[in-house]
Length: 148
Image (cartoon, rainbow, N blue to C red):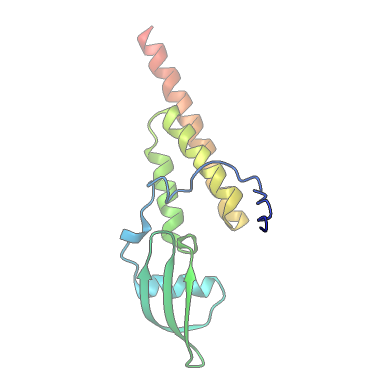
């Protein structure tokens, strides 16, 4: 009659990432070998040729030959691709109301808290979010003034 030790849950902020909220669906992307090779080179991998790309819901499995001729395979986040940042920028600009923007901003705060983004990309995305907020506030004020 042994007792199981009590599981201690660490605090984890409630929320979902961009994939779990179905805002971005990278498993439907048609990622090219050139795009994959470029993303891996940016991450510091010496890639000679891409062997196979297997898209999963939250990550991508990439098999490749390195410059030494070895076959390497690993799982990578979709966040390594330049297309990921483009999708986020498109999401920001498609927000038509302050409510939509607030929901996206909440998800983006979760993203920045739990996933690694290079600081310059994070700063750019923050700036775009804030600029779009200003645009939405301005258009809302214009609509209110037109209705008066």
